[in-house]
Length: 307
Image 1 (tube, rainbow, N blue to C red):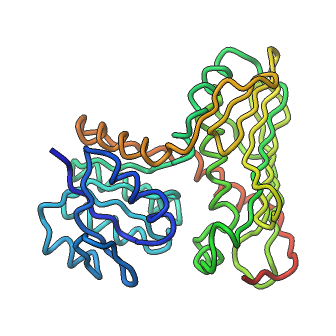
Image 2: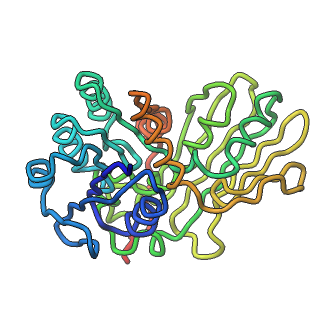
């Protein structure tokens, strides 16, 4: 029997990823939506989460696909109602409010899933296995995309709590923290802020690690050419390259994983297992690196940005 889920927030990511993934999985049924501005044909719709929780007590899973700024209040209400909760990345706009949700889930005994969808890309397991037995000599992330293409007119990303270029950049950090055999920490950063925006449009990060290898990440939201989501790792025994956001893996130039987009389908499969085992999945390592970048980063003002 399918488990009923309510999807909160019917924007681009919901239509591109959440709705198709739910529809393709027999374990799930999209039973309701919550949005002030949009709905899904054939699915019961509510304007507020309070209305949902009051009128549909039979729905015990809430998936939040809304910007991070209002997410805490939505998640809190769902957890207090005894619902399992799926959080679109990042889990919240701050570490403190994110950890507060983790505590609430523990107190109510429900499953809470802080999703990092890029970790579920097809090539990530192979990359993790490859690096587990090797020493790293160089680690480079290049994550460049066109914000106008992927976030058309979305002003929330430029407001405090919206993370700016770290909205996609945190995807790269989520892969990094998954595939590395040890933890790293940020040493310095440069963050480029458009003069008319409150969040960065580009970032250059450096990390330290036990191997002493240079580790760098470059994020840029002004890239109008080929969209680039790559991680290259030179080791003592071969060079690994993750591309297409983690879907493809090449080792010494030879393709070993040529995957496609299964990230969100894998997220919902993971949530099925979490609920069945009464567990939560709430790793905050990618968000910690973002917060460290804001703490350590040198701020540079660049040309204004407009859609």
